[in-house]
Amino acid sequence: KKKIIFFFFNKLKDTDYIINCCASLKPETKEDFFINSELPSVLQKTIYKMKKKPYLIHFSTLNVFIKQRTDTYTSSKIIAEKKLDKNNTTIIRLPLIINNNKNSGNLKILYKYLNLKYLPIYPMIYPGHIYKPIHINKLCNFFKKFIKLKKKNFTYNLIGDKKISFWDIFEKIA
Image (cartoon, rainbow, N blue to C red; front, side, top):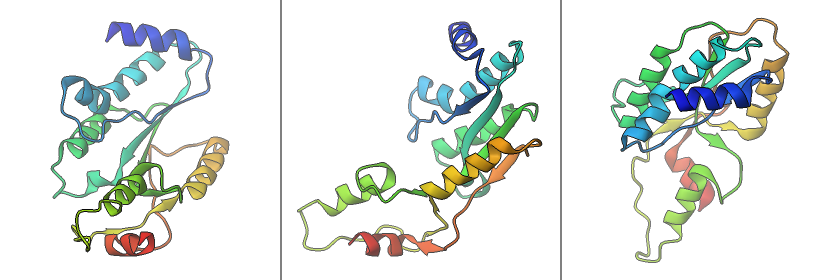
């Protein structure tokens, strides 16, 4: 931890904002869990030691609200949020993000699945999951407005405008 603190202190001492978007989506190792649950508070402690205190923005997930989500990713994000205090910090909980690029993120996974040639059909897994995805452009607009705010909230829960099911996402891709 001391090496990381020293690294961040020296690299980030002249910045205004630090955006922590580091995450291991499928944490398995000790290092993965450190990134998800400990790194945010390490960043925050590093900031407190700086003369010019940059503002910390920590990305989390809306999954923290779903009690049935007991996966290691969600659990580690809950731990991270509990370790952060409200001083000079904002947590932004994100939904599914859509960027219309089939070669990145969740869409890449779905396209890879659809490109399998094993079956003439594609079975749907969990077709009823409901999402309110946010388009990447709206997320960028949120950040533009956020930076200009004098007083920032500790948490923002972002969602898109339209409710869609996993089935709807699959249908659009197909």
